Length: 250
Image (cartoon, rainbow, N blue to C red; front, side, top):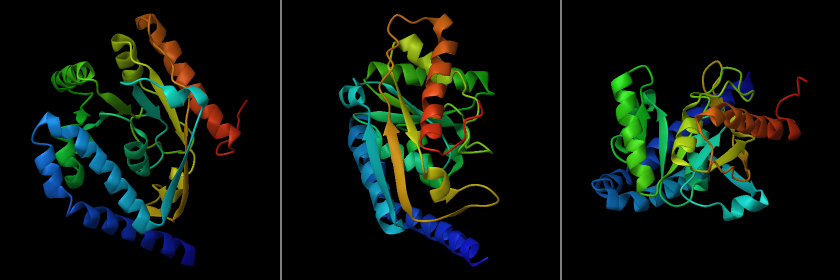
């Protein structure tokens, strides 16, 4: 009972820090996001914001990389497992160059995220054909401008996280159609740092992230999308199994 209470108090503290650290940065974000020329600096500021949140909530991230990921080209599409809202903070730190989030429309309704999804990031309503089409046009424009994308192929935080939910096609279709490399990322601890089951709770501590080697899509066509999706799913799942985060059901 005491442990559960402390975890709930921590989650409340996290929410307070999240909001308070954003308040002094908000006017700066507004100015930077007035024009695309400010997006790069705005993304650097997002990294700083993420680090401030971690500093005041007792979180720290350790990033490990496979050898080829150190030399990965940009732009690219980062895809990861999605088990916590902390994945967003971590990706803000991991992503290189000019980047943007491609995410579900619900995030646009969160006040602190709204400023980003009106400008640098793209919110997608998959059920609305017109809006989905407009979102796709935006992504194509950003690709031409050299942006990388951050996409969570599960679409949302899974009910059984850290066990993976099925991946959707979007990230892999985008990668193949634009011949962008996929960079898989596995988050190993985020699901227990900020828990989303039976209400939100959490605890301070380590967050490990593993950046896998990039997967090139040059020469791939639409017939390769399913195999590419399966390959990335297996890479992330195997890392979770290797680190004993989930069990191997084979």
